[in-house]
Length: 118
Image (cartoon, rainbow, N blue to C red; front, top):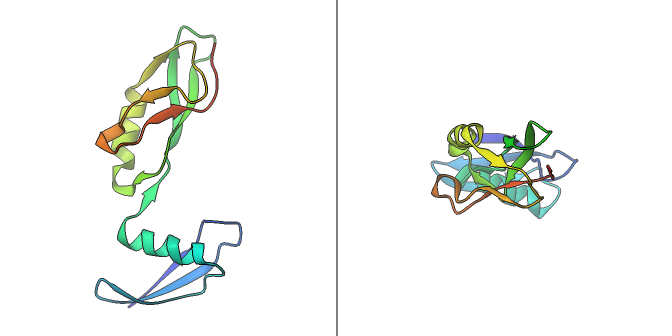
């Protein structure tokens, strides 16, 4: 069986084709660099994504602050992660890198602020 992926590691957007037999990868073609191969292997075995959103800020002239996961989390947890982010609130002042949600969904990954709100 063949599966096609568009690599998202760089602006080239290589069309990477993976040939599989069952769960085993037989061949990977179409990538311009090793990062394309790594991306596809991860997509097949353990897809992960960064999550970006906003969180309400209490005590600031700004309603919300942008946040993101400090690193990628399993793709299957995105909607649960967003529920926790939507329920979260942080008190001003907020600084870049402040932990908004520690260890979200027991992934070992924090949700952090990416801007300041005073």
